[in-house]
Picture 1 (cartoon, rainbow, N blue to C red):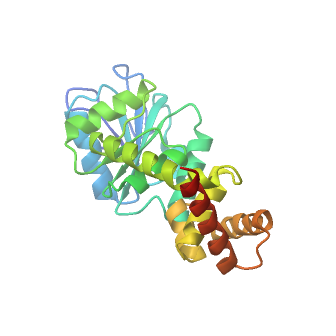
Picture 2: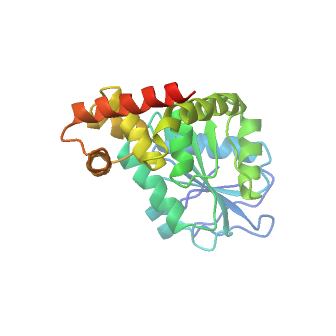
Picture 3: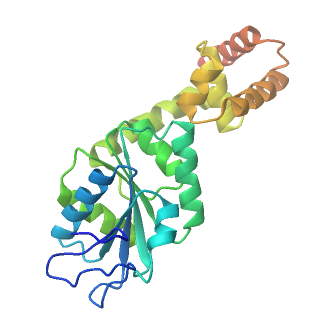
Length: 246
């Protein structure tokens, strides 16, 4: 089913040689990234059996791909299987950014157990061109990969309506602050108004804690506040003022 180079082809196609080369039937390749050998090999086999229409390489890391790709066909997409990892984890987010930046012309699609809207949005912000929850079937997975390879962006249909409601809600929440702050500052100010700690703000907004601290300093300067309590008080006043204008 697989070679030492980690490439997998369908049963009716020529086998892959030990140097990772494949003969003529496939001129494109999907790279699966997953540190778990059994998971990535099973996924690669399933995709090939469903006639993905391209060669499939299953590797533990980008570094392994560089060493073993041989004369494999050019990559057309990268499927990064996170399993139970969260995109909002800084290590995972940085890894997605690094891969997306290194392979700028190749779409990176995330496959993950978690289908929370915050995770999907975070993945797209990190440069991913799609997000496939493991709750979908293999047919949907194949379609999502082909869509990304064709230049589209796949997100679960169930998330689209939730995304619309979230955007409308956030727009209403930060509207009274938009006259003073940037959108990011308004989001941080709203979190301060609700008494959230820096670590919580960083996690929810997918920011580093040091970045949150910079935003807070700028917010305090704009409001001429000396501490977080005063920021919360003045932000509440801005909302009260907006309510009176209505």
